[in-house]
Image (cartoon, rainbow over all chains, first blue to last red; front, side, top):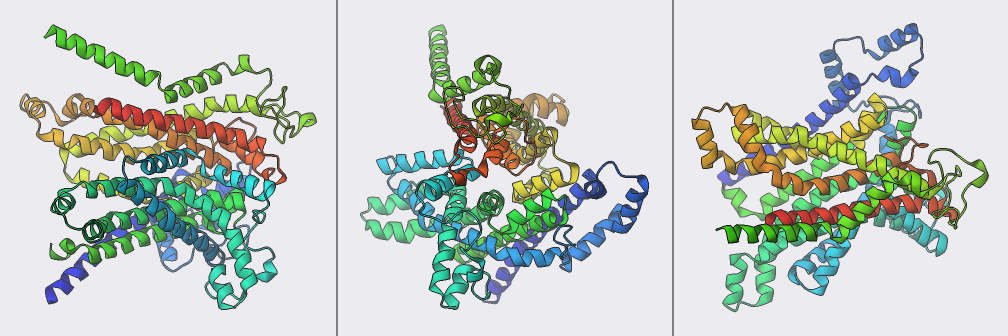
Length: 342
Length: 280
């Protein structure tokens, strides 16, 4: 028993270490890109400023110090939750992010739910009925979807479902009327409005969420469907499925007891990957739908030559992505007994 | 012997022909051809605004209508093919040129370098790509050249991993052992014997990577990175027209997106065929 606990702890520590390594790598790369490839001062004052202003700026921002000192300072402030001050909202970047993170999370979680409820079952269907009409049409849809520029698909949805057939609200934010906003507990409007018992703002929030959520999910779904189908086919054609089927074991037992358990590991990996797709894809989707989340924040900051919010959004997205992988690893450990023995 | 080899050659030729007359190959040929012949196919200039003819719907004079600056959308879609395809091809080639040799070296030597490169590619693949591109452009400014570099950088881990995994089994093969015994240095061995044997998967992936790059270029230009607005590029054209979609003016955003979609669908289809072509 003690051995198992030790092994569990060791495994989790190793995975945590790997995640921290990736996060460290990402923060280092963003630092190098902004300080070594480019010079933040140019971004702020432009190229046609006098040397005095440049020097003054360099002194004020601490850019005259040696690079390793700047780097340690950067790591120190990031670890203390200090991500700088935005140059166009004049607020600490951390506060700006705290304000916008729930909007992005709501969008990403909604898209994730769509993928789990629709995308994964489609992949399973295609694999179980492989070679059938179902399989071919699911594959054709996935191939079409993989080639459609995601944000353009969002514009098509807006044209057809807002302009031609006004089924959905205009692509401007999360509610019909900002005054409708329920008191914030989680920041997720769907949850908050239910907590406040306001059915009207729940419907309004849901209606605003559907088109951007659908767009975001459509961007990530083709890859998810394809990987689910391919791994499942691999499992279904393996010996440990064919043999019990040949011996006449009930199909349901074979599929649910043998196939499903083996499919759980690859499918959780796929979902962690999907999380990464969604965090990246949300930038374009939020721009199309004026969704007040992290992606729109980063794009607006970029248009104001403000780089600190962008770095912050990169780091936050990386944390979510790495967190998703860590959860997948923990689930693997719980699902797959071989990891516990080895 | 001669009979069998000539029939094999015949068989090969048939398959090459079926690859070249596949629908996706034809679509690609039409796209490239019309991009090259753009000055002949259309009388309009792609980057001169005509304030007098703003947002006209598709007509005989303007097949795809005109955009908010009064420029002919059909003309711009044709000219945009040039920049989109060349940036995509250049970035993928860059990724191959850097990634493939490193991958071959990593797979062949299997030492500390392999470990370091694998960790680095993991970090690179964990990056949210669009956000990373934004960071780079915020730091060094946005230009077509930087767009090629950033997209090339994204392609490096793809080819590094792919070439590495096909170089791994070659390590123990007889021709590599023979070359090693006859005194080749590691570098010349990797270049002369390992790399040529990893070309098949590289070629198969090539067209798929270009399709992906086209979508990335369009996405980045859509948020104002890379290709700037007066220049004709599919993503920046969509950006120009996006604000008018809610007023029912669909054409300035629809046609460039359709072009990006058709190009990337054809490239994906061609890539899938190519994979089957080498494997079978």
